[in-house]
Length: 348
Image (tube, rainbow, N blue to C red; front, side, top):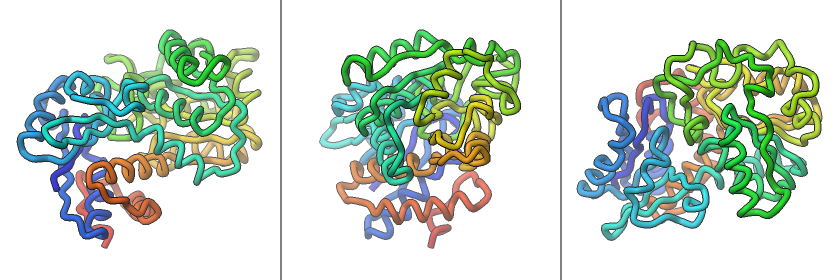
């Protein structure tokens, strides 16, 4: 069974060993290939020809990551209801000559939250990032029963668009947009940046959430330049929102190896606030460390990464994987130095 991943900068992806090892445990002959846009020297629009080539070669399915989760939509024959609602696809099943798009990011996050922080209060949650990952996380939060989600993004307009879409699906009062993150942290973005290049494959999706900001900005972080020792100005929308929230979810590239830093000042974290991270390379981001130091309960990005992969595996193979076993395999992999590609037998 041929499967794989299309995206930019996906050399450090843990998807190949996770999928191949679980397949071997289940007696499924499966190969998981990488189609790295950076290595191939092609733009995101190449996802169409790559998908067509995979279909012709007899592939069963493909995962899709940055920067192709939206671009791939026009090349699909059908969307699952969730993928259609989110307008983003991270899993494509190729069957009977048709390409069917799914989104397992939202359900991966929801399952990770449910199992990793089972007693988390969900009355009010602040979400950082309104890209593809943010949209998936917000959908997962509200599906899981969150009362209200307040969305912040560097692009205030995009935050407002996501909040409006969520209200349309979940009802009035369930979501709202905060002031743009740049204004919320006092405009301290002279050193901030996304990346003109690509980021490692994560469940981080969308224009901002998938790992890119504007080309040509200075190399520091995608959200804030070393804000960990500071605080947002008194009375900002972000500070007030976090102060009133039960939980904080981070869905931007800040904290990745290529984007070190904190997305919010560490002074806004507190013991009665739970904090969930989407980034998983590295697993111990600066936000995770700062939240633990503040006494907050923390959910790292590993569970979302594994559970979205487990659901994709089931869609590809028609076989239910052992998600708990995949979590154990993930722990082994993240305890080793990142390699260009780690063979599945590293887990044997």
